[in-house]
Image 1 (cartoon, rainbow, N blue to C red):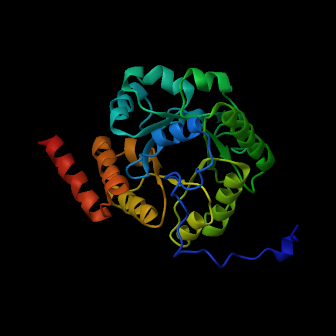
Image 2: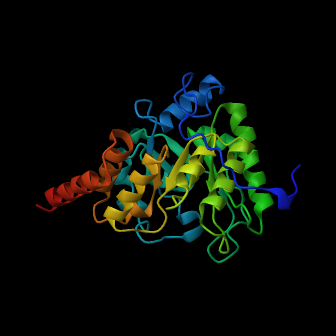
Image 3: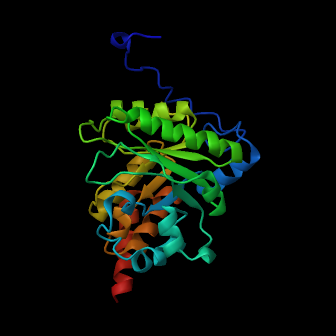
Length: 295
């Protein structure tokens, strides 16, 4: 085991040698069982290998935040326009009609609030209920470097172990504590730990410097979080940069449901993620759709 003072930054990222996906189209998934691959294929479009996920699980620790006061009014109409829904079981059962038939990545961690230490979570959904809901994947936060780092890692490990038993993938979500630095070194560490523990894919943040190395250093797909609300052009630019540097999709919440036109935003994101449109082209699409709705 290397001493802490002997850990060095990686240098050989193999940027000219992409990961082998000849046996299955998703990075790092070639040796999974059939059921695991089938569920991953519902998350990541087989034609593009990418995904546009709509996250509306914020209420599990934030309560009725802006845009999620009435999910039946704000989120239910958007469901058909996303590839995947990321939500809590309560939000799913109360808000989304089953006939929408969208794959669900189920938020399975909880036990904290914005009034307390965010990293002090537990596994809040039993595997039986995840199966009962038909979840195609489960998700839990992992807080590397935070006060309850070990507990959050144990939560993810529990989901990975139980999910693997039933062929359900786990998405590890890289949470950021109040004192964590949001840079490539931190997210490179957090995403790699999550993948090494066995997470089948990881949700993380885009950073302006070094994001490509984060992706190269993580042996499973990464989808980016939207983070705080940005102007639509900036959010689309962030999505394009992430995809261009190797991300396998986006999992956005506030940058969709707080947008002036959430449906147009989802369609513009889809143009970037699945069709390779640049940010300026996607923004022009967004503006056209927004103006058409207003007309």
